[in-house]
Image (cartoon, rainbow, N blue to C red; front, side, top):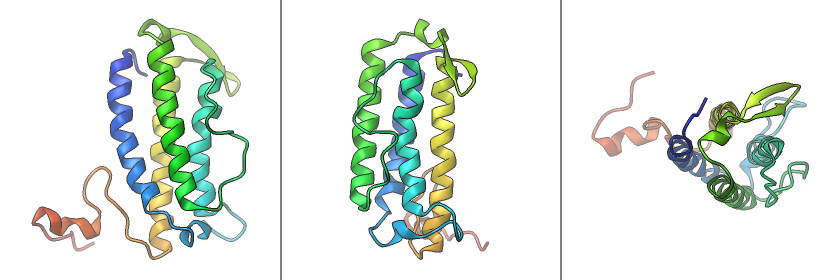
Length: 167
């Protein structure tokens, strides 16, 4: 749970950078990679990550509108990345303009429960990280190199003057 807006904003900017890298690895070809037969595609998972931002945060009254949370996934990888940029920028500006540290203690109805807004912000970050992990697996299945987010990916170790682990 976040208790200081500044703490969330710093953490969110770091997470946004990782998500930008992951979404930047999407292509119009690989967004059709399915999780499994009858399951979401890579593009659907990526779009769910994007569309959940306004869906979740609108429960707090912020009124995020640059992405319709009920719209179908775009058919273009760049559109998904651009929507992420727009909606995250809108979220940051809305929080800065409308919330204070005290606002983080306010309670909202969230999925049949009552969450303090600081908890909602933590859940938003966890949700994004969870789906980034899914996206990296699907990217590998689609034959795509994966960018590192919390450290180097297998192909990036060399840039640090080290060998990738043997596993």
